[in-house]
Length: 283
Ligand SMILES: NC(=O)c1ccc[n+]([C@@H]2O[C@H](COP(=O)([O-])OP(=O)(O)OC[C@H]3O[C@@H](n4cnc5c(N)ncnc54)[C@H](OP(=O)(O)O)[C@@H]3O)[C@@H](O)[C@H]2O)c1
Picture: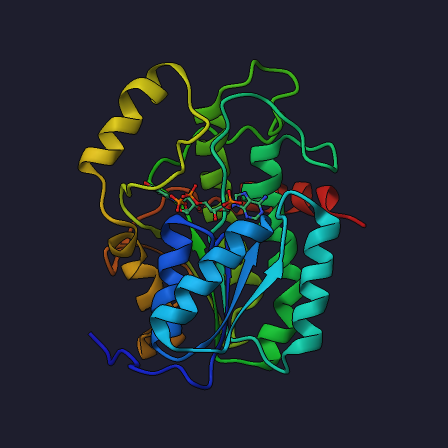
């Protein structure tokens, strides 16, 4: 295994959804490694609390909070513009924020909330930052995916025709995020921007906060008892963001710092998904 950089003083890292859970621990670790860290958070109070905690813990004052609601394309555009304004370079983008919904709700743009937050959000944000990442290369995009990934319905990704199922919506969003990772990898081959998808393990976080019924009653307590800590869940993500060798490998699905096979590599399906996301994020 290659060398892991101990310090990231020269690196600007962006973490979406850093108020709690895995994202907060990823941001903390990167701050401890002395990176400049931007926390992209939708809730100002929770964001400020995370910021205070991370700055205090890391003694790194180059950690900052920028408002970002990944379910709102206007918010994503403002966030990306502010990042470009504030930083000459961006080296690491960690698409971490996600939701698991219990009912079908829509984003401010009228898109089913899981699809908006977990798929269109990272698609738009990454594409808005891609030129900056290329200028800053070697650079990395790390997509926090999951082994719970299946059932992508490209005909009805927003559950307009089928009854809403929160787990199905989440699982298809995580399949889509892996497919987009392979799409970026193919499009930007040779750019020295590398793209990684990662499963953090089963982690005791707030992810199931909206879940009701069986999931709420059984899965949530199980997550609490058996899940990894958020810091353990952050490990492979931080490693992907910092180890030298990950400047060279791209287009892989990672679990516990090891490459795993991913079945979702059908190029025609990836192109269809890409077209759908482009259409869904047109300004
Ligand atoms: N936990 C697991 O077992 C597990 C397993 C596999 C994959 N994952 C993945 O790991 C990632 C992190 O999840 P987690 O388990 O740490 O969940 P979590 O504790 O629920 O944290 C999710 C984070 O995303 C943020 N977020 C949600 N919607 C947002 C939006 N519209 N705009 C901006 N931020 C938003 C939340 O912010 P607020 O504080 O404002 O809600 C929070 O900071 C997700 O991609 C998840 O799918 C988790």
